[in-house]
Length: 376
Image (tube, rainbow, N blue to C red):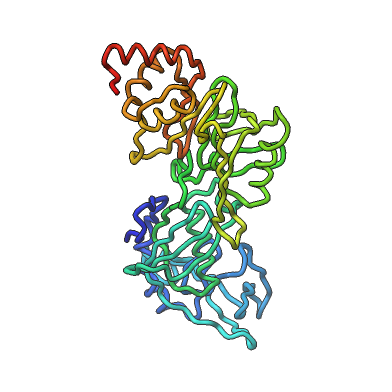
């Protein structure tokens, strides 16, 4: 089954899930008061409280303590049939607890789990359902470096303990924001791109860094508000302050221009997650005097880059630049070294610096007008 989220990407599909769901009724028929093992969690069954059970002697045999009484191990050979090994071993309560009754066991229905990479929230969708039937949250220590099988076990344990009888057969990932580098590689979750100061690192959605000055032109980050404020305090501090932009195979040290505007909004109020976008004023101001102007464009096809370039060039030059001139001037500016590419990634599709050489730009514009390539 597919989750009702178009942007969801498959992280892991359990090859044994179909067999587990098929043979589980046979196991439940032959095992009275079953309890699933910590390492083989099956939602719909009570689960052992820990990986290593506490053993106690009872009438000459050792049994494991559970919240519902003493249990013995049941192996597949006792039930018969090779197919039951997908479920066994399981535990069977043989000495019920007089105070805490056994909660019962049912065969779970198939489901899929969708993990939000921004918040760690997992939404579980039962087969045929367009709305999630349960939510749970995973912490960063669980997510980083985990493979699909590890996550499946963690999610199933939580479903067991929450008494939600659905069995995730696959795990998908989704995020409301695009991170610059793949978070899933070889079936493992990898650390997202990060920006860090000396104290803390924050997940990075996108960035642009000026090639020659190494100044931060654009930074889009998501994290706990305290961590986000720490990054902003570094860039808003004294001259020379720097942050480190890191991702698999990439590392940039970028400095503060002390010339920024910021935009922020909450992402998850319960977790205190906020989004902060830091943009150099020279990428947004209508006039830029004596300095480079920057064009930072998103990774989208909905923007006319040439028209956007003409707007940024118009901010630098004292002569008017028409929007329809953007294509020719961008091409000629790059050829004459008046337009420089900035390093960028993530949600930034294009990042350019416009060299503030007014005289050369005016000569270039006048020449293109005389040749007829630019017309009024």
